[in-house]
Structure formats: C-alpha cells, structure tokens
Length: 367
View 1: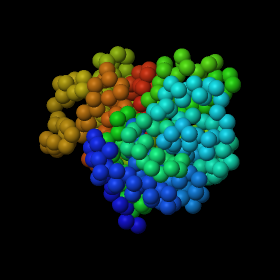
View 2 (view 1 turned 30 degrees about the vertical axis):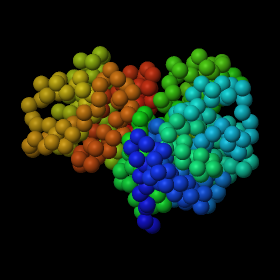
View 3 (view 1 turned 60 degrees about the horizontal axis):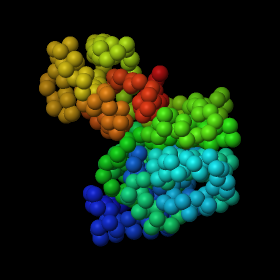
View 4 (view 1 turned 90 degrees about the vertical axis):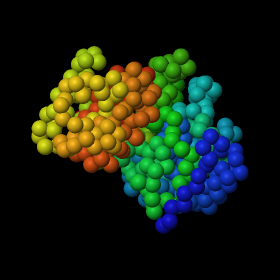
C-alpha cells in the first residue's frame, strides 16, 4: 500500500491548499480508508467509527489487540448523539468545561457504534479535539472517527507526521501533516459515574482541573485487574507495557533536584561501565551537572563528540512539566534512532501534568 502524504500549510488550515488536503483526507475516511491526523495531544490513526471494515484496518495497521478499545472523535457536539446513547448532567458539565480539548469521556455507547470499537464494552470513549486541523477534518468527514494513536501498538506515540511514517508508512492510506502537536501526551480518560469520576488515564487535563468540576469523589484506576486483558481493558492505553521505546528505559528518582541529578549520573556511569550504549533524557537544569560530573564526551541532539559517547536529549526545563510532556515522545524516539541500548530518565513529581508524564514513563519501562 502506498501511503499518501497530505500537507496542511503551517498556521493556515484555511488556505486553499490546506482545504484541498483536508477535503481529500475526509473523502478517504468516508470511503472506508485510514488517515493519520494531528490532534493537540498526539497524532491519531482514524477510520469511520460506524464502519466495521474500516475500523478493522486500524487494528491490522497498528497490530493492536482486540481487547484494547478505541476513542471516537467528533468535530461538533451535535454528532455526539450518533456515538453516545446517554449523556448525564455531570458529563455535560465536563464537556462545557473542557471541550473541545484533551478530555475523553466514557459514555454509554449508541447501538450504531460497532463492538470492535469498544472491545465489546457498553461504554465508548468520546472526545472533541481542539486542534484546528483535527476539527476541520472531522467536520469535513461528517462521520465520527475512531482514532487511537498513530503508531505500532505499544510503541512511542507520534507527535509529528514523520513519527507516524516511521511506524505506519505503507500500512495506512494517508498521513495528514499538520506539524508538531502542542501537548505531546494523550488525553485524560474519565468515566463519569453517579458517585463521582474515575480517571483511567491521566493526561493534559489534570486532577487539579477536574476536581472543581466533577461532583463527588475523583479517583484513579490506572491498573488492570487480574484477567482483564483476557476480556477487554475498560479504557485505552492501559496496557502494562505501553508507549515504549526499543531501548530499555531506566527511571530514576531522588530527594530534591540535586538528588535526582546525582541518581541520574550514577545510573549513567553504572550502565556505561556495564557496556551499554547509554541515552539520557536530561532536563536543561541537569545539563551543567551532568557535564561537571562526567569527563567523557556527550552527543547532545546529534553532535557526536568522540568514542564512549553518552547520547543526551535536551528534554526541556525541569520546572516546566508542560514542556517535558510536549517533548517526551520526541526525545525517546530521538534516542532510539541514535542506537542506544538503554535510556536513563528522571521521573517528575506526580503533580499536574507531571502525573501524566510519570504514567507514560512507568508504562514504557520495565518497572
């Protein structure tokens, strides 16, 4: 299969060229094809959610197991009635607060939604993305679009069109290139119940944002129970090993900034001494400490400085978890491409979007 590359002009999804690209992508979706497209979180691999044969193509392209349900994307609230049979007052409150945006709600599915989309479950994940290209595509397609992340199952999610091509070139019909995504980690997944909200996947809508809007208790359920994989995961992205690079991922923590820096340097030295080709996800504040504590050369974003090199990705500011989230997957992919056998990465504090970053890192590691 030849994968068509369609490009939306940077910053101008309303230009004539952009409109043509979006219209062509929408036609492919209506015709039962698969299109990767940008959202504000990561790129999704979309197909008509009402077409069983089209949705099956997603599972084949991604090599995704049938127990992992999909999220359905809509471009307008009016389309919600074709996806969900019931919408509670509490769900409406969350939609008013966070839609369009990176929040997925688990709702009672409409009979028109095929079981393949929900892995046979009664609830379906629905979200309305805020990305202008995603919104334009969904409105032009005029069908709800099932779309998990546009990567091979279990691998690192894509935050640009080139990442999609690395995993899915020749396996899908088209890639709609809308540039880099803005948030970098997947949507928050929330099940709205009578007694409160259950967060199945932390994301860019944080616990602190949800608490004032959700009535009742807000609680987490991010681990699968024994035997659940034999049936169906209650929400997407709950696989025990997920979002993973090819290299082994080693996570470090410490007391305070200095403790994290020291733990990271000790781990880098230990792994290098063991003969590993080492990569490091290093926030900006860590760079000076790493260089001061280490006399051997570094490769920082592609500049090779000699033998016995540690490959360092400049991750962003440790005090800016939004930046860490945005650059997380790009960094893991860059280190994979550098050929490292192990990646050392510090864990941010479980506060705000830092909780989502920790969740992805823990799932991507052998921890």
